[in-house]
Picture (cartoon, rainbow over the protein chains, first blue to last red):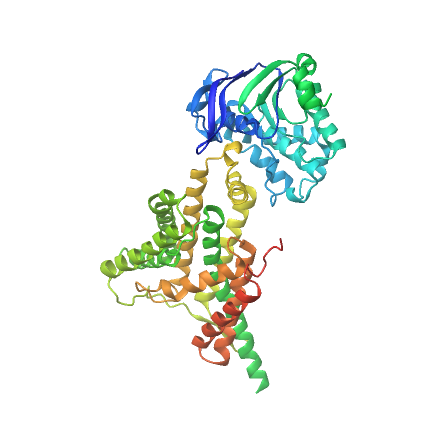
Length: 234
Length: 290
């Protein structure tokens, strides 16, 4: 479904990604793990067009993302839940969700998608008229994921969904990712919480210092000695 | 004696509210541009001036009725706002704010000079004199009442546009986090253009209303440009509600100050009030406490 080939990317004179290649097949959940500053967020931003790579190619179901204007990439079926959630704090929950359905294709189905998101997060229905910035971190994460789901994506990009959340809320977020997956959605998730994410995904890539250092099924990654030592503390 | 004084006071207060309506309309237009595009249109009142000349020529030379000329003027000034964005602002979006200020300041002089050359420095008017409403020994001009009502309707329409439509919601969202707008499928350039046209349309509406109260000349923008800026700053740049409140505060100061002395003293008081407020609440009347 999604295919990245030899991506080089960065900001100004700083290069964050070096020849990164990865692919995500329809229906899969794929994780990208690695330490802070490894380039995980840059990878997500390159896929959703927020920054453009210096070299390499990215395609979504055969469409060249690099030739798609950044605001049209969501129409290809890619929805990005950015790092730190990035809700519009002074818009209501419902207006935030409305922004997720901004593209013309999604507007027509707004009511249907809103019901879907409210089914998934009953809490959001209760809080629909509340300013998004006044909610707890966990609720904001739900709202951010809900906003991304409003566009009825094929591929959901999740950037550090557990960051800054209490452990019990982290559990809820990963439960939720499982539920979203079971609905047939393809998921690419970037996480520092290696233990948790490997329970949810089918495969994972290890990204360190801007390069893919290892990849394999979740079981293989869990069995990998260097990953166990560096990220699982065993 | 006291009765008569109270009548004058009441009359001045009502006139202050009527003036506040149009000032609030101007402040809304400027706030919209600043809040969304993060650029200050120094030349905002000059768009109003061009709109007033538009009304003048449409009514006096083409013989259109006022109510036919008004929508044409609004569309024309909206187009001028969009053009200003495309030609001047868009190329400078990532330039330092001082460059943007200087550029729009340059447009101010270009528009004033253009009007001087094209229309001359004569004072002109529409030749429409609306009657004065007498009510309980108070006098209110219909031109002010009409301006107030139309300004309120205009602001209400903008409010519903911002609240109910996708584009309006995007306009509110973009001022909170512009980097992620592309993730929502929003083309920020298009939203900027729509916002500029809307800001222009509000200037056009203000032109249609002010042309009933002011004579038209190339420097007429100076009569309400500076005051609009003070209102917007007093209300907190980009704060729509603050601008609305500040417009009425200013209008009352001008109107009541004019009651106790000359109208000019009303302006002096208003500017003095502004300076004092800048020390007390530099981020605006309704600034959020961080």
